[in-house]
Length: 477
Image (cartoon, rainbow, N blue to C red; front, side, top):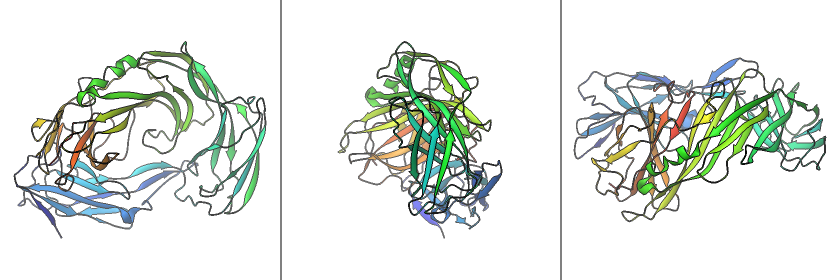
């Protein structure tokens, strides 16, 4: 069965879709959507995700003045087939549960939609009160602002512990209820971390750092509704240092280029050292342990943190990465009958800590000079059509390996995503059904530098990776 959209005029496909032509020989796109689970013992299990039945894939192909959608079929083993795609380029449309559609420009005939996760494939949640009582000793003398965190790679659990020892205490006992949390199983590895507050550099920048830890090895599975007591003596883990001189003025210099009229501000700026299991890229993996986090004070001036100490409690199969993250809030002006709005993006750079330069500066700038249907997209534009071409120029700073384009609908108190596209060039034709008549939109164009990324495996990420956002002015069909 085919679904067809007919356009009033023929549109060039830019970087996303080349005209396949209805007379080209039929070809088939195959692929799989599997989750690769990395267990504590180092073994790997790949299997379909639990939400596979709610996933849909198809290929969009332009044929003359119209578009054709070739629907795909996903088997129970996670493999999928999309027949009758043609021999040219196409746009892969992926709909995952509870998310807007995602579109990927592709030429490959075999696509890997898999992801990597640390932990067990099965993680049953406790359905009733299930208590683990931690009896901790040998704490660093407790101070205001200290905290305790439980990390379990097998259960993929990272949670703060609501213990509140008195000031100066070196021991504490607390019970953690696992209700609605993954139940510990035999063989799971875990760690209890004590964090403390400190200040760094001449500006006395507030930081949170791990100071002591204890390893937890689960010898037996905890039954739903059961209870267990774990006595643990914390110890001082091997110490490390990191040096960071943050040139925020250079990040601030990019702000006028990020939004129409230069209405962008930095609302937060953090530098963190994180431990990532199995060398996963921390920005997209849902699991990491924070070893050190520095929260820079408000402002756009330079901040030298000097040399800061932190503890390294994890085994060698964890990789330390440095994350530089700055939240950018952008104002979208009222236009075309839609009220003004605002949106906050996280710009970031993720890289392995080993070899990372101590002077932190941006190495990637935003996309520039956007156009929509051939018109200046820094100004509000009406009548752009339902499938306009969105284009831009490459960043003036650094080299982007791809761009993430999200179409946002204006009109409510918060912009709503209608869908996103991944583009390796500098233009894209917005596919059918993304825009609707009478609605007002703007586009977010995030430049991404990630040299190791493979377009045929769009959910497998690499490091280093840097992301810098940019937004257009409003437009309407």
